[in-house]
Length: 96
Image (cartoon, rainbow, N blue to C red; front, side, top):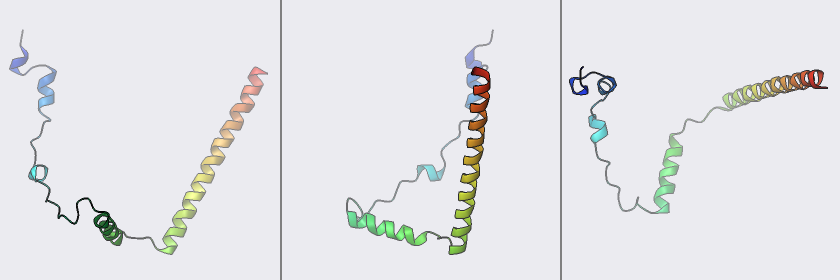
């Protein structure tokens, strides 16, 4: 009978998927400057800097995507309503 120490069984299959950490995993975070730690001004300034990097949609893209969302929500609501009414009718035919 083989023992688990010889590499048979479930535990040997799991060990093949273990990976070692990469250099990105082991890098330490850069220390923050005193102005950035614990101050609201640092947080707000960093937030505004991040908002500058956002790619905002154009007016046409915003309008067309809003129409698509409203259309899909309306179609989904109509489908759910139709199914609900069908099941209510079927239940009334069976139980009444």
